[in-house]
Amino acid sequence: MAIAYKFNLLERKKSAFVSVAVDFLNQYIRYILVITELIVLGVFFVKILLDQRIVDLKEGIDQKNQIIIAASPLIQNNNRMAKKITEIDTLLSAQKSTYTLFTTVLDNVPSSVRLSSFALEKGVVDVSGATYNAIDIKKYEKRLKKVLGERSVVIKRITIDAGKYTFEVQIQS
Amino acid sequence: MNIKQRIKNYSTASLLLLFTSFFLIFAIKPSVELIVSLFHEKDELSRIDKTLEIKIQNIIQAQNTYMTLAENIDVLDKALPQKMRITDIKQLLASSSATIDSLSIEQQTIIPSTADSLTPIVISLTTQGEYSQIKKFVGFLIQRPRIFTVEQIQLGKAEGTESAQLKTPMIINSYFYAPK
Image (cartoon, rainbow over all chains, first blue to last red; front, side, top):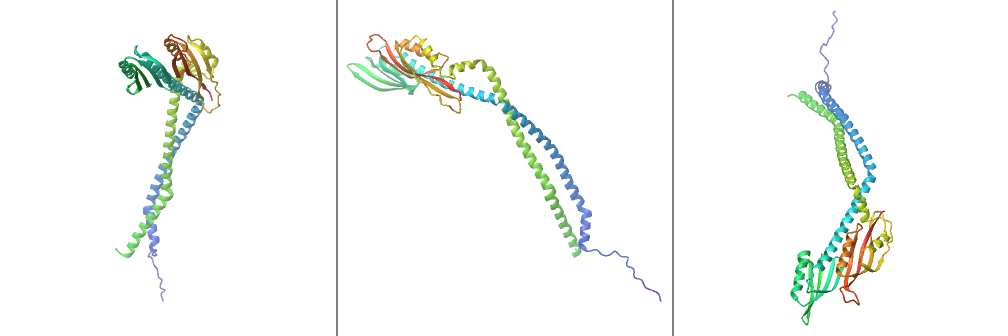
């Protein structure tokens, strides 16, 4: 009696998931890996360039800081000098303004006017005087306004006594 | 499309998503973040570098200006000396042609400060003379290398005189620039 053997030459059937995973690995993972590697490599090269640039910048900044620290006495001295020049400028302006006020008020007095008092304080001048000609008070005011400006002259008071006009004027520069 | 084929398609898509996400999250994202942060750092450092460059240029310019003006520094020191130098003020006033009846100079106490400070020296004086002489005296004061400012001036007729003599009380300030 002949012996019967059973042969199955067909490949054993794999489960669905394993088959999908193998297919996937074969087809797609290489692209993902290659793209990732390309990106990481690109980043690596850019990082090298940026690192080099950053190191150069840091060195440059350190050197510049050293220069500025070394120049700090000079800067302080210059600042002090600049402040002093500003102070001098302010004082000279005040000096010029006061002198102009002083000379303008006194040099422009009409010949018929006699001043009885003159007081200059903090850029304001109070003048009082008298004249027999009222027009000269107006003339005096006009002269002062011409030099010092329209708003600079204020006639505070005018009185008349026996034909003599007494006045008080306030002038500021 | 049969069920097996559909399962295969979905599984492939899921795996693709999974792997892509994994590499995106753990490889690409940190790399991109690193590059972005490095760019930011580079920009910040470039900005600082540029600012310092400008500052150094300004220092060089200031140095050049200082060197140009160096010969005039003594003019500034004469205008605003670092000490009161009251004797100098007295000598200067005595050298004027005006008749000075009285003179008093207020002594200033120098208070230590954190910065240089401008301190006035108050000088009260009374002069006597005609208007032209008073004007000349004021002109004399403002033409001095040292700065004098007229704070108060009063013109009034001198007592007991019939001529145009004026008695002029004045308050003038001189200054010194006390170093810190």
